[in-house]
Structure formats: structure tokens, C-alpha cells
Length: 387
Ligand code: XIL
Image 1 (cartoon, rainbow, N blue to C red):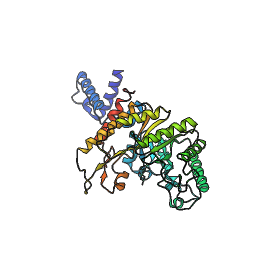
Image 2: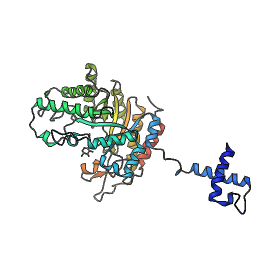
Image 3: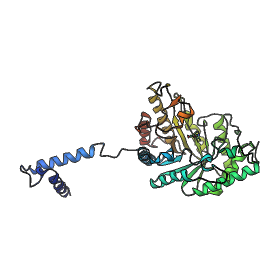
Image 4: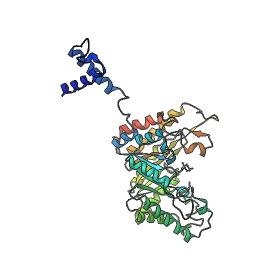
């Protein structure tokens, strides 16, 4: 075997470099040739440019967890964007492309174009798709929010929307945020067109309107996992207590819910994630899984757009690392997803009017930041410390 390999290499080399072949004027000794050849093989095999880079995706596959990110279909034609996405993630979620304001620009139309682009990309690269979101107080089109619809009309609109969208993506979207950000910081239902302004018929009845949405969703696509997604309910607080009580109640009464999404848009660089694990554990104890759905850690910026402090990159990395480790070590946490992956495209800039930014694991030129290396190291450690 070694001989055959050696002979094949020799033939190639003798063509490229006559010294190695019979045609050479000063033929080298066989021993010397063998030494050169094996040295070459070792150098090539050992050089990092030869080895494909170990990605978050392959480390996550090995750890048995999903690593995802929010995506913008308009960017998929950018080579660096698309290749990084396919290499680093085994799950994606359209950042906006499956929201009401994109899909339902008018009452009578459904525009699945942008969402379909995300799904096509995912299928071509064996990536799972999370859907986001079917019911939310925000990101709705004006014809809906200003249409003066009656509760009966709104109920009909929501039911038809859930059926049409979920059935369009059945078999392609494996998990849906059925409802998003429905609770306020006290754990009470937020005012919204779906709840009480005027609502779909359950105003004043707590989470009863959400229950209705989950029941429709299960009927629309029985295979999809159904999630309740929420912001600022990651640790132990009044909102996460309310989520816990809602899920417990839903489970007790057979309302279909499979998971809770914890967003984790983080701005506090001193954040202690200690009670994130406890919160995930108690939810998992109810028989639902938890996805970390919108992780980003925004940093304060100077007016010229540069970092206030270079140290913040290290503090940011510490948080990413802690969140990933917590998820891996807590039973029931099955996915870690960031809200975008390159600082080139992030909602933080516009939503903070430029005061914050650089929230994601890769910089604007797709180079890994300390945060990315932290995530990778934790994924490589895997679930070995799992409780
Ligand atoms: C944001 C998107 O990133 C922006 O592009 C869009 O303009 C507004 O919405 N919580 C959510 C996400 O559930 O849908 C939001 O995404 C960020 C906060």
C-alpha cells in the first residue's frame, strides 16, 4: 500500500519536478526521495489551510445540539454571507421574512417569496428551519392594525393565516414561534390587536387567546413543534414565572405546546446567567424543550461607531460562552440561536440609533471575534457535564 502510494506520488512529482524521475539529470537516492515525500505529506496534512476549519456547525452536530442564526434572504446572494451560513449553522430562522408585514402586505395576498428563499437555501445545505412568528403585537401591516376589524373578523384572519402559512411550510419548517412577546414585565398579557384591541374574542381572559392560536397551529401542521417565544423572561423574574405558569396550565389541560423560546437580547455586560439554567430546568420539567432563539450581546459604541472599550469584546465573549455552556449543561435546552451572525447585518444598530452594536460572533468582515471562539470551545466540550 505504502509502495503503491509512493509510486503514484513519484509519478506525479516526476512530471512536475524532473529530479524525481528517470529523466532527471541527477537522480536522488530512493531513501532521500522517500524522506522528501513523507515530509511533504506531513507538512500538507498538518497545515491548517489544508484542513477545513472546524465550524460551530460540526461541533454542534457532535454535541447533539442545534446552532442557529437569524437570516435575511436579500443577503443570500452575497458569497461570504452564504458560505459562512452553510458552514457554521445547522439551523436558520428568517429574521423578518415570515412575519405578517412581509407575508401579508395586503389582506388578500400571501407573499411567500422571501421565506421560500430561506427554505430553499436550508434544504440545499441540510439546515433546519425555525419559523417566526404567527402572532405578535408588532411587525404587522397597517391594513391589519388600522382596519377596525371586529373580534370575529380578527379571529377569522388569524385562523386562516395560521393555516395558510403553516401548511405552505409543512415539512420544511420544523418548529414555529406560534406566539411572540405576549406578556409584559409583570407577566400580564400585553395590550395588542390579538388580545384586547379588540382581540380575537378573549379580551380579559388572560392567555386564553394564545391557547386558541396553539390549537389552530397544531391542527394546521401536526408535525411542527409549537413554541412560545419571549423576551426578558430568561432568568427568574415575574415574566418567566408567568411563562412557567402558562405552560404548566397548557400542559395540564392538553393545550398543544412543545417548547419555549428564550430570546436573550443582552445589553448588560455584567450579566450573571446563573438563573438561566434554573429557568430552563423548570420549564423542561414541564415536558417542553427550550430554544435560545435570539441571542446577541450588544456593546456601547462611540459616536464615530467605534467601541467605547476594547475590553468589551472579552466581556461579550464571556457572556456568549456562559450562555452556550448553560444550554449544553441543562437537559431540555436543544438549540442555541443568535440573532444574525455578522456585525455587518444586525438589528441592534437601527434599534439603538447607533448607540450600541457589534453584538454578534463575527465582525463585519466575517472574521471570528473572541465571542465566536468562546462559543466554539464550549460546543467542542459538548454535554459532558450535563446535569
Ligand atoms: C427585529 C428584526 O431583527 C428587525 O429586522 C425588524 O425590523 C424588527 O424586528 N424580538 C423579535 C424579533 O422577536 O422578531 C425582532 O426582530 C427583535 C426582537
